[in-house]
Length: 269
Image (cartoon, rainbow, N blue to C red; front, top):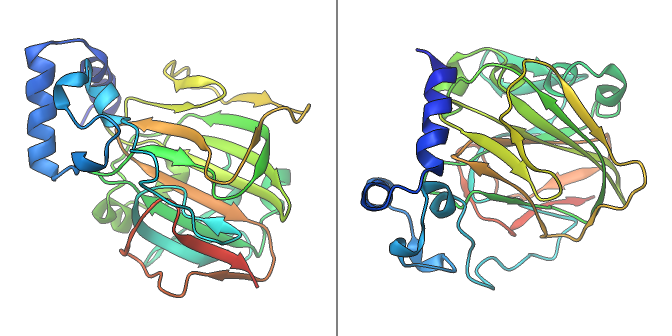
């Protein structure tokens, strides 16, 4: 399929102020996917002028309390995979791995910091809240846009497309934390019109086909645990990387399990 053309078209439709047409799309979407609007800060569908406004809707204050943990879950969604990084290899699905270097856009020096570390891959379905929050307090150091494919990232595709998350378009965010470096990768997909961060705004489009990098060496962009850091304009996946350290994930976690923003994710053992 012409995935990039479809994605561009979806982005245009999602951003248009289409009046009754937009309202019909939103109403159908809520019914089709069972979106829980009772949690939204603005539950009235008529209040959203565009589909993007609806899709990136805020939650009511207090809807996602933060657990007492070194790292809390940064999104609503489902667990795709998590665990140890074997050398530089991240487990995707049975028979499929990809490297940390490929994931971060070919930067060997950055990837080496996560050799033998840990990862988590979290999938956001259409019904989920689509803002991304910080799992811990951190200082932003770099952001890298990596061009790529636009495969779907649903569980079926993850089982069938080798190296999926290191092949799709993505935005790599590099942070310093009290526990060492940390990377949060926002992975695009078919129909994901764009990805945005709170400090930059929309990162893509434009889709130039080139790797683009922004540096924040002055350390002026800082986040508290739970702060919003970005959002998907239509849904996708977040991949998180930790360096080698004694890390214990939530013992209740398992692949395909539903997760909620703010729940206990991991603690330093």
